[in-house]
Length: 242
Ligand SMILES: [Fe+2]
Ligand SMILES: [Fe+2]
Image 1 (cartoon, rainbow, N blue to C red):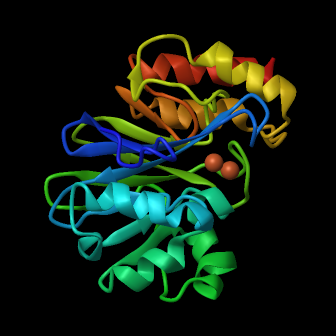
Image 2 (image 1 turned 60 degrees about the horizontal axis):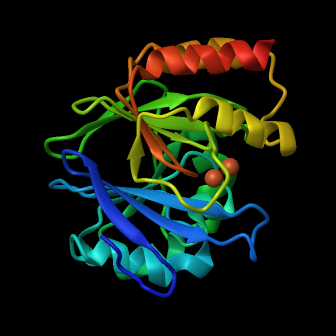
């Protein structure tokens, strides 16, 4: 569903209670075009995973408001500390008085508790948090793809891995959910832009995520993907190691 005709921002339910919000940025603004996605988990304690950049706040707010009251947001999650992950964090904390930032322990210690209006709820590696029906689990993945504080969130009931910047696909025209190739298109992006760290643990960390056997990879840039997520993560790990 389109929520802003001017920007093309849309929101689509990709699995039970999980919505992908996506704003396309045309090639005139970012070479090749790009998308910024956020994910909304609608539950007793609603979670918005990534705030989007600060300048996109009105668009993401409007998309959330098309499904639930923005003031009902309870958690504002982030993989790592960058503008597209948490640039609008404080704007959301202002309009959602019960909301807390949700992140890993390093992000809380190093950046979030200094920059955010309210302290973060940090999850330890492997720790789970119930949102009501959905249950999210935090997985520490330092430097994978980038950032010491980096981790990813896995929703256990739908087997959705919010995989952040992993499998970043260029271009601004994507379906909300696809089963087509995203590995080669994201590898083309990595060949052009060196956005992965050069950690020697990439294969181990890919295996750590693959161990959750995700059914959906909720990418932050490009389409979300449905299929054997464990297999695709292992393929990525091999490419990174090779
Ligand atoms: Fe990033
Ligand atoms: Fe990102």
